[in-house]
Image (cartoon, rainbow, N blue to C red):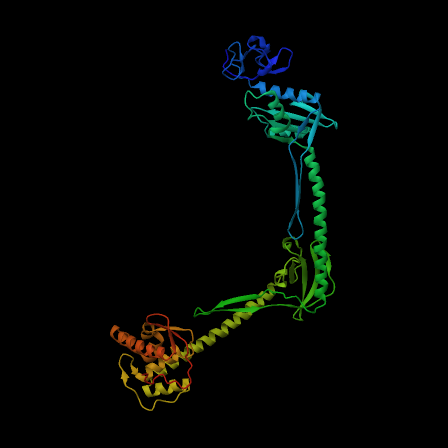
Length: 499
């Protein structure tokens, strides 16, 4: 005898019976509903275990068809009292981008019901498609119903219904208990169990309705954009109170032989817009004059349509217009096209400027080299004359002591440090270590770079910087580092002894 427990058996009259609806034992008068079995069943209705049907003989049947067949019969029976079958929700959605790239969308959900007035099992709808049940409503609508107990319909099954245009749903009973009662099964089939559309013609109708609504809305929005663009075009043609355009600049960068770089900029601007503007799909085309000399094309268009614009080979100003932006700065975006000749001209200007700067740099190097040579060979008295003339200060009344580690007098080294490291250098950071081995100071004074001389210079500079800090000329930013705070004191004598 098969060990499979089932709660439904097929009566000899062809009606599915629940275990609770039949007599005990062989008197139940039921057979297995499985098409490949049809063996007599026994109704096991004891006092302890759950009631169930079992096969009288060991057939190896799994009893899979019982719940499936019972559900189909319930749909047939529901037609007798015109019960309502709850259908899955119908979701319609459609979206489209307007001219500016904004997405306009509409969605709608409907929860339809289907009043069954007729139902028939195992209806052949095509050569390769037999529906579990085909129902007819009070509105003469037809609906195929598939019952899912062990095997759900896949994409192939869905496509079969789509190919014939037949509305169809699948009711999922896979989670129901094997011994579910008749009332529970009826509620599950008609109302409670999960269900989904295999084919829904109403969804396509709903999406078509939404498409019409969205397309109309997009058309209206796009027309509003074009109207705003045209108004802006006519406003530009007045050539008064121009918007605050951020004009794009052209630039060419060059690097000198000393590794310094510079950039040449030119910012072409339209100084006059013509009156005529011609419409195209995303805006208007016109003409303008750059700086009163060069005629150019102007294309004023709705934002986000740059790639859709056709333009000539003439110099062209593209103006992207976004009326939704808050300020002119963000409302307009400008860009030049077909201005290769302008760029080549700017490259030539940059090349000429590079040549001029190279000459000036070379002359400056020569001048500095000449000055360094002259200053280095001069005696301390002459050095002071040069420095005092540069600073606009009187000469010291008497010469100071010559300091070996500086290869210069006390007055000279202090005045040199003041002139090139402190005077006019507000915000510049200095410290005794960097000054003591500074290459520029070494080139002017020719001092020794050995460790002993360096250490002497470092201590002397450190002491002197501390005095300048106490005077308020420097501001301390580290243990031995200072920031120049006030370096242009009138009549300050850097060589003067500071108490």
